[in-house]
Image (tube, rainbow, N blue to C red):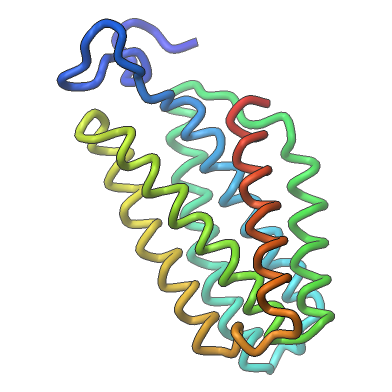
Length: 189
């Protein structure tokens, strides 16, 4: 549990009684879970994609960045004594399966998966930044940096043919829905 001096218990600047405070523990929990899920998606894609394919090279680059995000959130969670989601085993299997299935469909479908996930994560991170305001500059700076890299991943995926994936609209709507559900569950569980 966070102590009285912990940044998790400090009220935001300008906060007044009755104002809703950002739940930074839930933010860290869901962000760490999301980055873990992203590493599993990319691991699933790499298990299927040919190692020399252009898509495999792109996924390898994006995976390295996601591993950096995950390491940072792991560090922040340890420092701030935030428990991880209890759903990590589900994200372990589900993320890998999502990555593998989309890569089995096609390289473009694997890129559409990245497009969908990163689009949803951009919205998620933007919402967190609005909630934080200037309350937690360290966390906000990390989120801003990771958000920029997630948008880079989305743009890379689109340039690599995501929009040409079979059933792109249906595929991306389904994946974005999965992301929203995972975000909601990981905040609480």
